[in-house]
Length: 155
Image (tube, rainbow, N blue to C red):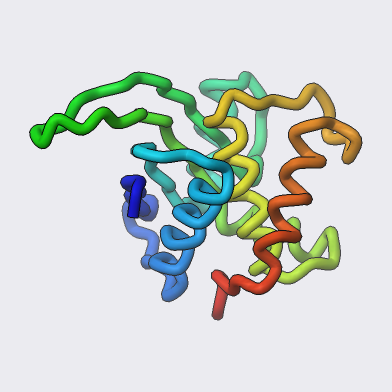
């Protein structure tokens, strides 16, 4: 493993059985996008938690599916290795399930999409609309397709 990924859950939320597979999937995405020595965290939460973050940091009322908080600093560890502190990805499991129903996709596909989306934002990419023609979203769907054989979410 060339990256450090910490996966946590909102306080009081039970850790899903698929959480370790999610961290492994994030590692695959980082490797697939040539990211090495990245240090990032993923927080799984419920809609009220992410709604508070959305209101505080984006001035938007209501929940969203994924938020990325880019840090972008480098640090050297005790072994002398340089790491890129990428930041944090916050995913609402409630919105994940709602999106899957709304868009007619499996929770597994939607979860992978949200992780990829978060990593692309931490990579410095952005989009001004949700148009599928946006460069970031085209890359997101291409990456998602390349990982179609990898299962993360299980109930």
